[in-house]
Length: 454
Image (cartoon, helix red, strand yellow):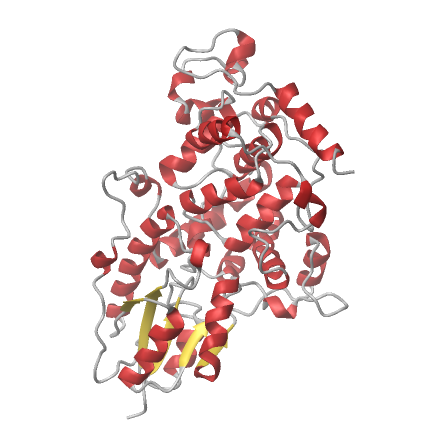
């Protein structure tokens, strides 16, 4: 019997359209492995909300593998060390895995050397394949999108195998419960179960539903109170669904163009972190390294108010409370809340990025870094620093009244004419805080900080 091979799973927790799995099957018995590695990522180890998702996704994957005659082996430690130890323990001849672009995973991949065989499978097109005339990843999305379109449609997704050949002897696996990925004392995830069902089966079902709904995305995607978003981002991040499989379901539907461009943004973001691995902690434009962010005691109080959804700006507070309640926030509101922190409060974008990293079930190094630097004006492809989103008018423009009523119950009884700005309407309930900074005051402070760099 041929030697077994290891299948190293990370953010690709699926059996369908899994090129690494199919390559492993072609070589011999397969030992699927997930390594909980909190050492290699360092400060970027997965946050609390994603640990909740990971627990349920791994449990689902284990059941799917069992149905195919296989098992999921769980181990903890440095991924490269654990995998080499498993090779020695099982006599495995090779490790197969899907390529990742986070700098810590690239470091682990390099440490495994020739023992590792990498496959492309999490993008619409291989990231290294979409290059500019100088052979470098694109740093401007518009140029990237033009180049990517020349490589679409992607290859057709690969069906899941009927069976997965098993080794004669299985290595020991750690019990998932021992990892204590689920929160307790207190359990802050009580709203997660009502909002989400992790796992490949749920991802595929949601993708099927979204194919019939994607036409609404073009008009409703910016309306927080409307069901105009796919809610697929955590499934895509954990690789329970491949980007090309989702593309195949939606690209020929009416008005799907904007959604496909959102899928492409994921690819673009990974190109940025491939070119600039420190993008999650370093400004894309060095000019902003000297910007004077607020960091005194008052700024810390403001940051805490923002995190808790107690800023006095209903649209911002609704978004931050939605984030805490279900580990996700509507995309338009993410931009408004992020702009408010960076511009109105003049607090370093990295403080917001770190909060999102811990609270989002779809926290993604490439997406988070690129999006925060875009809204902050510090990125290689970004808004101007002087462009400041007005949260009150944004709330009214995008009809956020019912969204606010859901997530800020203190304001549930206010009419549309007052709910976006209760202070100005003179009907702010006592339980709801006053604005921590005036719109004009915050705007002028940010503009002055920006002018000081010129």
